[in-house]
Length: 70
Figure: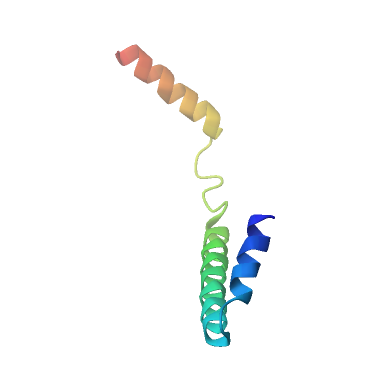
């Protein structure tokens, strides 16, 4: 039995009020995740073009400078 099947079996044993409470809580959690993802997606890529270097090249350069300081 999968985890989901087990949860569904447990849910079927709840009374209607508890099932409705559970449904509302699940919907709230899904909505929060969707809103968070939408907010993050709005900011994706806004920094593009700020630096004139490749991000990985920048990191490698910074690491190399740190090694020299040691």
